[in-house]
Image (cartoon, rainbow, N blue to C red; front, top):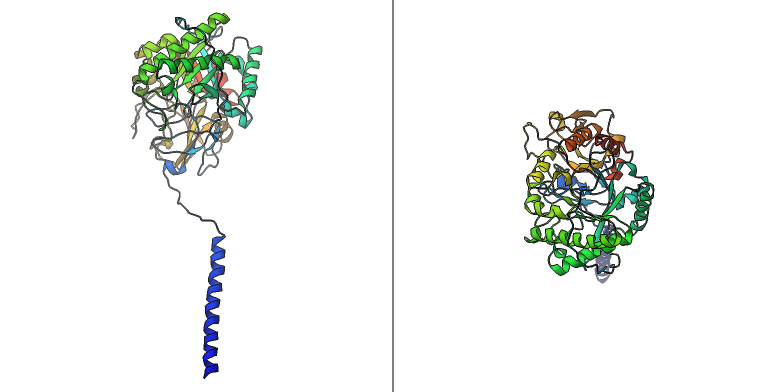
Length: 487
């Protein structure tokens, strides 16, 4: 009896030990595997898009649109013909349909602050509209994005003989409200090459562009008081002189409202922006008097009504040599449906979303008493590619699954004249698009740039600005614009 009882106890303990050992090894096996959460992909723009900056001057919500970033701002490419994921040159971020953003791969490091020049303030001059090259109807301003160097397009590759001005994007604003290098790992060499271009093309002017979609957060603070405006203006002059630029271009996105959620914004930005430009103009003129040279002051301004309502165009014009109006990103991935990136004119098409155009934006600036001869019209050297588009109406005004910005060179190399893609030109809006039954691409081509060149001349505007030079590496669009602006 006792022996039998001991056997039962032994068997019970053995079974229990086997259960414990089995549990232990199972736990170890699962513990070695990383947690994995699978999220089903959606057909919404939020789930699929990763965007530049663009654009626009970088893409943003439809109430405030600009480069960026294309921000939006950086060179971007689409990857597959079926489902695209946006690959940007230096700025990628998941975006939302309401507040898309373009962010650089890393937050730019702040360069050491430059000592103030302490130049005395003088009465600002009425800034002249810079003369274009002989035989050319207006200026031809090209933005060069610092991050293009990461993708092996350098300033010495720019066809600078076709440009009157090059804007180097971007300088950042430090916590001390002074300018800092935005991309200190590439900026020094980039700027050195820009200065070398002026040895070959002595009439070429270079400007440092400040802010942009990502780095406009401190403009409101800089513009707030007489002291802060003086600090910022002195820094602009010091930075310009230190690095050999011929002027300063402010890209504040945006006064009063719009831009990134974390940006400082105030109702008084409207008046303070004018005062900030006045102070910079004073400091530039003081330095210019000492150097026997006129230094340039320009801005990049929004193309929509809210921007015009939030600045004093009629007052600030006197302090500017010219203003670059960002007449692109008029439609983009923040919309519910595909549309035309920068239609020259509005059309009569039935559309499920808002209508706008380059012509409407230019007319609004002129109606706000901004001088035509100082208004430089923006033209994109990129497009927007939409995937999973419904196969109706040649892809125009249709729902889509995802979208990304894409440089013209990539459009030309990967999609233009390729099997399955059909080109279309809108007879009223004067811009092209491509469609293959599922992929829709809105962009500019030499023909549409010809229409825009004619428009600039017919309106007697100050010229054309392009975002961004690295997106047209072969120079086809730049050459079309150069030829189009000839008298």
